[in-house]
Amino acid sequence: MTELPIDLIDAGVFFYRKDTNRKKQKFWALKDISFNVKDGEILGVIGHNGAGKSTLLKMLTGVLPGDSGSVTTNGTVTALLSLGAGFLPDLSGRDNIYLSAMYMGMRKKFIDKIYDEVVEFSELEEFIEDRVRNYSSGMKTRLGFSLVAHLQPDILIIDEVLAAGDKAFQVKARKKMQELMSKARAIVIVSHNTNYLKSMCGRILWLDQGCIKELGEANEVADSYNDYMTNKARIQAL
Amino acid sequence: MFNLLKYYGSRYELFWFLVIARLKLTKKDLMLGYVWWFLEPLILMFVYWFLVTVIFQRQGENYAYFILCGLLPFRAVSASVNQSVSSVASKLNLISQINFPRIFLPLADVMANHIKLLAGFFIIIVVGIVFGFIPSFVLPLILIPFIVQWLLVSSLALFMSIVGAYVRDIRNLTPFFSRFWMYISPVLYAREELPENLQPFFSFNPMASVIESYRAIFMGGEISFIGLLGSLWVPFLIALTLLFFGTIFFAKFEKNIIKRL
Image 1: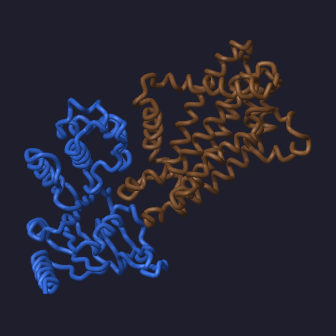
Image 2: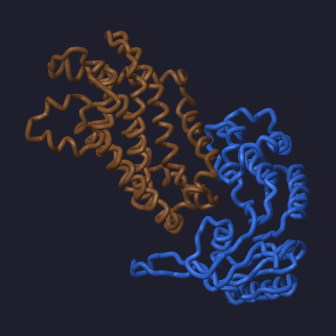
Image 3: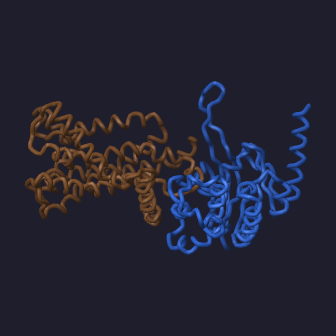
């Protein structure tokens, strides 16, 4: 049997927070999460703010170790949520490409190979020796995206719809995403946009207060999530 | 433990890049760039020489050079100690997004400071020639106290970076700690100048023998390979022990740093 790209069994993670009496309280940000992603599958994740989406992504990238159950990922994991996370503003664009890629576990040889493509894709050839401090935020995102887009991960994790740079770059970025997704073994997309998820994913996972509320075929889950949210909005309006 | 070391080893490229980045960062924004590596120690030497010989009227032959030999190595210690408390704490954003060997953060800072120290040794040699100390064939022995010091400071940085990430207040204390450590080390004075009843305690400070070794080598004292090992094996063992426990300590607590965000 081949190994599943992503396999979670009863995974959970807790944090401490202070309650209203300023006493430390343990609370589970995620509890008893079990699901898997098969080869070639695209899984969507929805849920309202604070449902545990980001925590789940952190567990998948290995940043946050679980406190219960198990999280197994097979292959390299790259998250498109960390665009430019490791950038040092006082280093040049070139140095930052190398630094970021090395943070993500790439070898220097590999980076040498993709370097030219990354720079070309980001359209930052003229500025690449300049300090990142002098970049506009659009330029930084472009650089970050171009880098991540050339890393060829087995498992790709995407947070929200990408808004990188101007219109022209966005079109380019979307195309690149498609290419990336066709190469990756498994993809997890987190978004609030149910229509986007419906069009992209086979299945959707709905998180609510750290638990799985529903997991199933994309259209079904998206519809019941929409119903739930409109209902909730109606109740709140009353 | 073995797997952990293997994992760290497999990512050595990141470690060196962090060291290089750190070194590059120190020269950015400065007109004179790397020249400061050489200017700083000379200015410091002057300040302490002024303090001790002009204000306290302490007389001594080649006193300025005597200070420099201790001051420069100790600068690497205090800079590392002061930076280590924030080496993890200042990178929380990165840590919460990418999974990488975080142990490199404090270790790379220490390494960068000690590479600067290697450059500093050249200053010591040049100033030494000015003072009439011609470098002899024992000069390469300088690497022995250097390595002991580097291991010792690295291990301390492992502890301090974690503590600094959990208890932010600690960063207000480290400058005092490193300064105090300097004053109890023979940087501005020699061991013989201490009151006799204090001298036994002196040996508890691993940096004491390290600094004395530097000085002996640079100032043409009686020194041999065996002699160095004789005075440095205790600090060396202390450093290794601390390094061992520091690695375990770091690995144990780094996991939960992100939960404290």
